Length: 125
Image 1 (tube, rainbow, N blue to C red):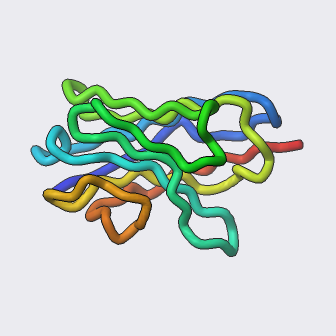
Image 2: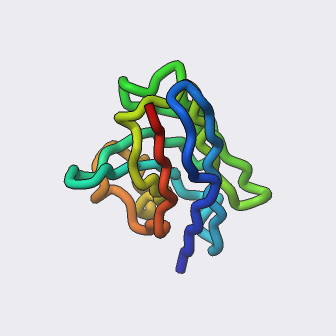
């Protein structure tokens, strides 16, 4: 019922910034918490950030606090992740995800029902 398409990834140097976008289709978007995850090669999918359905609450993994900002525009059915001061170890495929119906949207991937295909972010040193 929901399709998510990420964009905005690319190759940057350490210390640079990127803004990721996730365009959503489906009526459930405006009532769903939205999260960003990343998965580096050979590693498990890792929680990055989540935003509540109305944008009133956000939560970030410790490693990105102060550098990343998640936001959403429900009128455009889009969620964003502004990433500043990127580090090489943050090279990964970044995914957006919509939380299960009625779920607040936590740090576990199992809390999310829909996933995008991902966008590659590569940070060179």
